[in-house]
Structure formats: C-alpha cells, structure tokens
Image 1 (tube, rainbow, N blue to C red):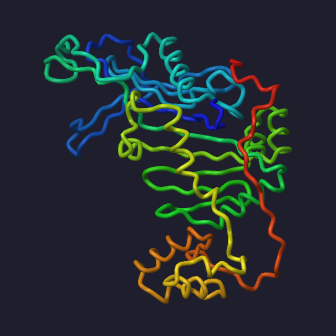
Image 2 (cartoon, rainbow, N blue to C red; image 1 turned 90 degrees about the vertical axis):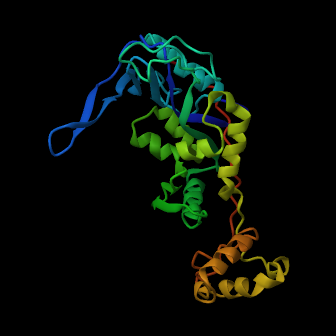
Image 3 (cartoon, rainbow, N blue to C red; image 1 turned 60 degrees about the vertical axis):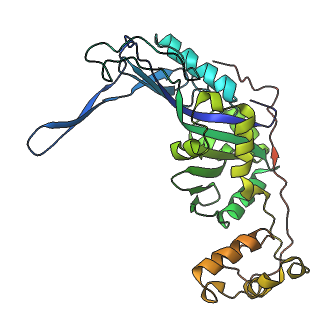
Length: 338
C-alpha cells in the first residue's frame, strides 16, 4: 500500500504467448450449437485456484494465452482490510502464475517469436508478443469517519447524491453505489461487511470503532482502454492514485444550500434556477432537458444538486461535518501475512 492510502483490490489481465507449449489450465469447455447441431462457439472455462483463508483467484491457460482474475493481494491472507499497491499486486499475480508453471505478465511490445505450431492460433506466420493487457482494476481506500454512527451518516448522505451519467443504488445505511458501463463507484461500512463475511474480530472491531467507510472504484475494460491504461507499461501507482481521486470527486462536495450568501456566489444567469430549487420547486418543468443538465452541472460546482428533490419542510437541524481522512494501517496489522 502506498502513502496515499489507495490500494488495489482486484486485478484482471491476460497475455498471449505465441510460442505456446504452456500448461493447459481450465475447469472445462463450454460450447454453443446452432439448431442443426453444428458447434458455433467453443471456449475454455477458467479454473479456480484456491489459497489459504478461503481465498481464491481464477486462472485460464489454453497453451498460448494466460489469463488471471481476482483479488491477488488477498490471496492466502485472512482479510483485505488493507491491501497492496499496483507494484505489489503485479508481483503477487506473477508469483501465483509461477506456482502454476506459467510465465509472468510482462510489459511492452516484445520481440518476434517463433512461428506458431500447426493447429495453433494465427496463420502460421511469425507473431509478435505484445505484453499483457489489463481488463479490470479495482482501486480502494479506507476512510476514517471517527465512529460507526458517523459512517452510517456518510452512507446516508451519499445515497442522496447523484453522479453524472451513472445509475445509483443503495442498501440502507450499509452501502451505496453508482455504476455504468465504464466504471463503478461504491462506498460501504467496512466493519459491517467484515462481520457479514465472518472476518477477523479484531479487524472488524477496529473498522467499527474508527467508522471506516471503504470506497472502491472499479475501472472496467472500456474505461481503461479509453484512458490508454490497459497495458502494463502505461500503468503506475501515481497514475492510479490520481485516477482514484478524480473518480471519487463526490466525496469533496459540500452541501452549501443553507449558506445565506449562496446566491451571490452563483453566476447571474443561473440564480433564478437556484432560487426556485432552494424553496422546493421542481425545476425540471421550467426548462428543456438539455438546459436542465447544463444548469445542474454549473450549480453542482456551488454545492447545489438540483436533480435531487429538496425537502423544505424538514425542521432545521445543526449541520455536522464529517471529515473523511484516509485511515492509517494499525501497527498490529500484518500486510505480508500469508
């Protein structure tokens, strides 16, 4: 884990080795057939490789292509309260591959390999190994809110927020998530999650006493491709930490809707919309959809989310600010235990 507190909680990659001759590792083969009984598609299924403490990853090798997916930093460890950074994750993945007699994931374009054997992939000509391609990375950080009650408050507050072009879901005051085809943002109370899965009592108690809110960002294949971060040589710890903070911008929002001078800070052309929303009006019927989303984008920068209903009938309450800080790993926690 690096100093920022951000670590990797899931990793998926594959690499093609043109020379072939690798051990075949698969749990079986799945085939689909047309109405006449002709085989249309056939592909191997990955094998579950199990470690101690009920941990596992999935590995697949057809003799040429090696694929691995899972929480490799958790493999062989009792929990994932804290985990490894990018460099440590890649090293852990390669140790698992080596234990199975498979070559490690490598970066770069590589060099021309020997011709593919008859019956192998390709057309029999020389093939260039292009290194490993990454299809998923989950980034995670533990935030200490100070108590389990404040952790619950943070989850409830997040459940009332919106993220542009992402679908929201939540489960009471335990978890909330925002998702689309490119990535997913999730936050949940880590102590409750650890108890649900029967994790170490000491770790679960520490998470509850410190009000740990776990924030996860799942970077899917499409987003990694668009960011040109689907190759090993394009990924660094610093890039991933920066990307994590960009994706979790929602945690830096501040609800300023009760500030007396809020309208003065808003550009004049957007003040009427803001004023209407502040008194509880449904502003979606006041303008076109395109204008609504343009106003929402500008006003969100001033702490107003006009896409959410504002309940002006609630009794005034004293605002409590919860300062989210990356949690420091306790002295008793052994990240290298396996």
